[in-house]
Length: 350
Ligand SMILES: C[S@@+](CC[C@H](N)C(=O)[O-])C[C@H]1O[C@@H](n2cnc3c(N)ncnc32)[C@H](O)[C@@H]1O
Image (tube, rainbow, N blue to C red):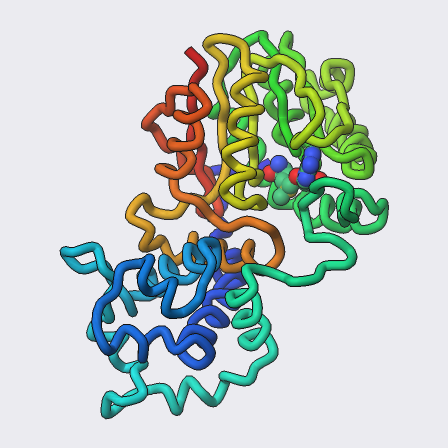
């Protein structure tokens, strides 16, 4: 379990994700000509998107990232404009750095990022997209081998973050629904702190097989009360996009919305709101873009990574709040930081 005397490992995940930010930057300079386009005049986000022929998701990944890198900014008319730093990336400006950055422009990761930006993600993904199960298409989360690989890949992160998330969720005897709960560690830690509470871990069947094995190990840790957790968890296999969700007092959506496009997030918010009992809370544990959509760099690099491997991106707190308000929930203002650039936000059913 994480101890407060240990460092936040965020520098490690920031470095991991910086690779995706670098690819975005080089694709923006050498494939999409973002800086040459803006050198003519500042443009609204809509006009810039139109000139570059970018769909909404790639635009919401790329432009917050270039702002976070301090290469673009919004002017007083809410148009995107080059900063003094960004002008070094205009080919007609002397001197400029495009020859130097161009030494890396044919890197396969850069070329692939440019293709994703133009297509809004992979045109074809015959084996499905990581962490996503939608409709009748194949999903790595339904193949026992890849479901195990992806679920175990998240296990270390979950073990680190789960005790902090659990300690910040309400203490109560009610029911927790951990939707798309993966390893289940967030549920197990919360049940340990709430000895009469119950929980449902909802995910794909192949993921829940792995989660049950992890619980068997976790329950034998010798921590007081850990042996009572197994009998208080229901493992419910299903599709959160279409299957009925059990009624609940608390609903946890951890690293969930960021795998999905905006319209799916809106639909999920409505489904989750319907599952909550009155006075129930939805809690989101994720990394959030600034509400001004210009950072943080840690969040925009993560967004670029998610853009590469999922159907989603990072969203701002304000974007979450809009989905919750549309779903009839009342967003609460607090943000509780955990670790690794993650935080908790929540909304209540009246
Ligand atoms: C990024 S993981 C997050 C896991 C966990 N909440 C955490 O924070 O570690 C996303 C999870 O969503 C699950 N998932 C994807 N599509 C789903 C669907 N349609 N119904 C239920 N679960 C789904 C995946 O199997 C995966 O476990």
